[in-house]
Image 1 (cartoon, rainbow, N blue to C red):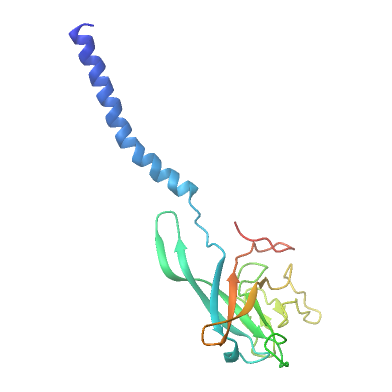
Image 2: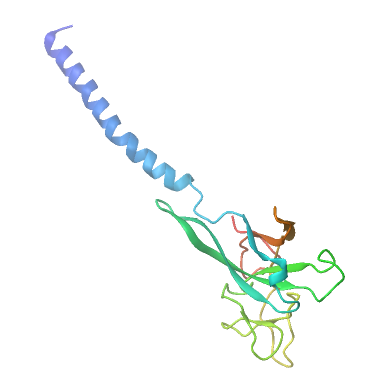
Length: 185
């Protein structure tokens, strides 16, 4: 091999190595944004002591967790809200369960609020109304626009080390405007 051809070959190899060193971090950067999960995953949280809830009175609680986007992680951010409704007085906490609903309206995704007029939930965006059990409420002649009832969340009563009962909720997000519940991917 001639000296000139050898130097051309070495310079091409060095140029390729430098290009690979520059391109590899760029490829990893783009790949990580495409392959990472930017949504809020299902999150199980201990919300409130059972005895602090009043029977038949809905109370809204914020769910805190880690919020991620393509390049940034924010710890301890509000990732959603839930409505908790303690069932009417019973003989024991087991007979007197708690129902948890997401605060997102299944129609357009607005925040559902407690109605000031009666014991129900109402969506401020399109006035859809829901009973305390989450089922759509018919409002006389006016049409209720919601495709389904409020989305119920898995919820259970658990004891802590001191023997107090706590309400734990598995927070999930659902696709709006569908007639059946579909968890957001």
